[in-house]
Structures are given as structure tokens and as C-alpha cells.
Image 1 (cartoon, rainbow, N blue to C red):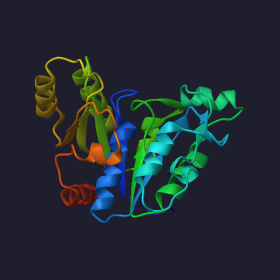
Image 2: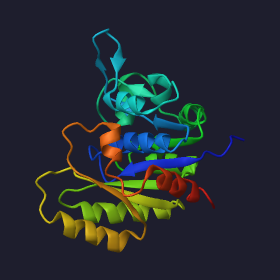
Image 3: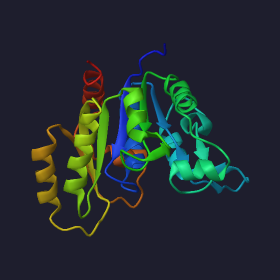
Image 4: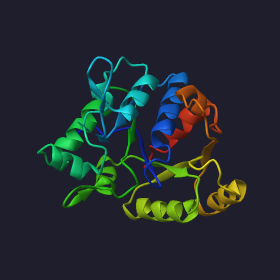
Length: 240
């Protein structure tokens, strides 16, 4: 029996809404509070060759830049594929199948390298991984409290409420949410955030504007909790 993980599962209202930026920011903030934090990109689809000819994933590198434990990019991103598409398709293109137990073992092996694991999901909450297993199943298997990243753009209220409903339907604890400015031109942002705050039923941990250089430290500066308070909040939601 694997040791129960401590940390968060970070999901989002869609793909390309800032999960990686927020996860990197959380990694930075919690490390500032003294925690040994392991950011884990559960699955990474989409690689490019760097100047040394190595195949790398941008999200994995962003998370790797935020950690302070001397982890390798392969430990931060234990499962990576070349094609930037849905994971089950990317795996098939490489002649592989994403099987539940090997995937969980790879994620847990990385997550257990520190005190707290921040496991980032893929796309939205229900992305297929194989014919009968998706990222909601993965979140349920990991049994971590969930942080929801809401991409602020048209439709975000509906997407956020549906995602929160799906998270709770899996018996998972929704710990909080972070608003991230996915569309810098969206109107009525304050009204949208107020509507979400009134309906999601959990604390908002921050509102991140559109940043020209979204470094982990720059993102962390927009959390509503200090690093120490954030660490306390993360520890509190681990309790059954």
C-alpha cells in the first residue's frame, strides 16, 4: 500500500487557462514558507528540441524552474509525449497505451520525493487517458484535495461550476480556487469573480492578472494569502 500523498491536485476549467503558471507560483510560495514541495506534471503532451537537441516540454520546464529540491525534469514530468494533443492520442502515436497502474506509480514516485506534492492535471477535469480511464479517475485515485484554476474568459462561470460539481461528485474535496486572466480583454471581470465567489463555496486563493513575464515569483505575488498562511491552508485541507 502506497503512503497517502499530501498536497493538492490542480485542475482547471479547460486547457490553456494557466494551471502550470499557478502550480509554479504555488510551488514558489510554499517553498518560501519552508515546505519541501514537489511539482508534478502528471502527463505532458507536446515537446520541442532545445539548443542541445533534447526533447523538452515547456510546462515541465516551467514547473522545474520553480522547485528547490534538485529534481530533474524527468522527475517533474514523469510521463511525456512528443505530440501536442490529447494524451491518449499522443500515446497511441508513439505506440503506447496509458495504463492506470504504471501511470499512478510514475506520479507517486515523483510526488513522494518531497513533503507536499502539487500534481497538475491535464486540460480540464475529464480528459481521456485510455478507453476507460480519465483524469477525473486519476484525481480520485490520488485522493488529493483539489485546487481549481478558473480561466477568466467568456463562459468561465459555467465551466467553473460544472467542474466543481464534477470534482465533488468524485468524492474529492475542493480546497479552493484561483482566478487566472486567460482573456485580457474580457469585460466585467469583477462581476464574474464575484459570481464565482458566491457560488463555488470555497475560498479564492488569488487572482492572477495577465503577466508579461509569468515567473513563479510573479504569479505567487498575486495570491491572497502569505506563503505561511498558504502553507497552513494546504496542510489544513489534508485532514479528512
